[in-house]
Length: 263
Ligand code: CIR
Image (cartoon, rainbow, N blue to C red; front, side, top):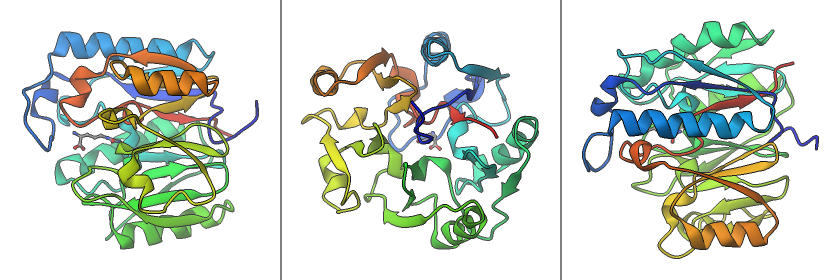
């Protein structure tokens, strides 16, 4: 297995903080239960570790209620990492916090300096290109700066649209393999996956579109049996992890880790 878009030697996660009760959410369905969140987070880390990857769990960061969602702070590629510039003002400072952890592992760490914004949740790296969804958190200027930064490593950036009222592009899709994505019907209808095989989330199970392919596993939130069975029948090895607490903060499987193989 050599696909660089889903073969990873490392992951970085961050423990949920007590302040996660103040995390951003579109609809308030109550604060996460910290003990349950910690257990679900531990289950997630354990799932990644079963593939043999080295998973670092950083200490909780109380100053940043959404800092458990490390994915938004950086884009990790084989050749180097890029520190993002989160569009949520309360999250802007999270990006700089990630610099020392990535410079310890990568020779080259670049940074989106602004004035534009990009969050990692809007970025889907496939085997052939990097798709970036414009959203309330990611704007044109941010994507253009990102495009210039990754051009040196030979990556093509394609701008796509995150559906209205959807937090991030990857809220609605995931990479499954070199040619295949899991996506909601509403996102696929935008035409952004032309040339890819698309497996749709089952009716009523749109909330499981945010899964991750991590080495041999597809890690997905528990509680979406129809989509799980479709993916299992298609030949993927599924690992379900409880996600009820991160979901209260609009977070899912991709948000909880940075996944990479540093050069
Ligand atoms: C936020 O609104 O920024 C957090 N509550 C959730 C971030 C989820 N991250 C992701 O989808 N990559």
